[in-house]
Length: 216
Image (cartoon, rainbow, N blue to C red):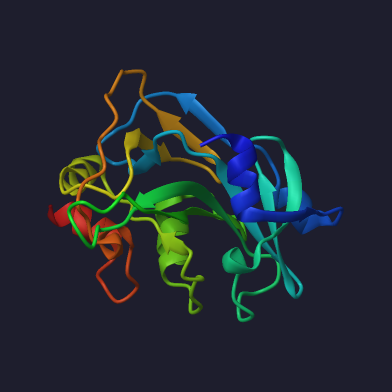
């Protein structure tokens, strides 16, 4: 997907809001080469994705596009709930999920979704604690957003073998807020498969992702 198309899906008008929370939430993403260890908190990167930070700012939701470093108002379908505390922000990546076809001869249909990858503010340095805090939030995300699963690398690779409704370009490790590591090795994109979209979501009522990964 082109960046201009991603922006038109997620964003409305340009926003000129200022403030310390907005400034902290709109820092650039750092995706750098490095080593992923067995203890790393890992998740997947959507093939050809574009990243956004959703920011709760009073009664509105702002969407910061990392691709062109511009702040917008989020479109209504990507607005955070009214119960989301002011100043909370979330890193997300855009996916075009392939839907199950009603008939074998039907043309493929896709649905754009934001996968919520990480908590940006309030700032928590340790990725495991940050992800557990994200999953424990007492408010939900809109239907167009899914809280993305994360865990240890071995468990994640088994998870990905079950297929996703979009292509995956590789595994990344969550480090500090807005800081991720990807190993320097070439991986063929994982193709999208027939898939229940709910499977990729980290559900609050399930055991924590870290506990599932340790047991795997």
